[in-house]
Image (cartoon, rainbow, N blue to C red):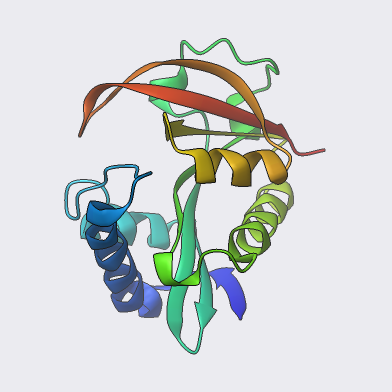
Length: 174
């Protein structure tokens, strides 16, 4: 397996990966309810790749896990009462983290999360935020195992889903 920051040449594999993941969610009890081309979209992923924000885990040139690591607080989180208060430039936010359903249960989530956390540290961030649609027990378990803690639960008004129960997670990186 290879974990790396995605390049533009990786875009076809990234698109295929997220399309497959969105299709798999139809049969998944715990799903973030993503819709391909709404969230995530080719344009959004291409922009994230152009800004060196997509981290992929590859096996035999196939993306098996990925996440988008942005810098600065997510506008959706501006009113969240986070435990740790740091400058916006010190906040990393993890979006679209997922492991292909066929590869779950083999430690790939933890391996990929460690790489993403290390990348955020290398980028100079000191805290990481993320959310999950509640309930999503496998994701919650994975994030807790990686060292995140649940900051709170609240309704988040997602652009693609509207008001939705969510859990917000935080991790100090130093």
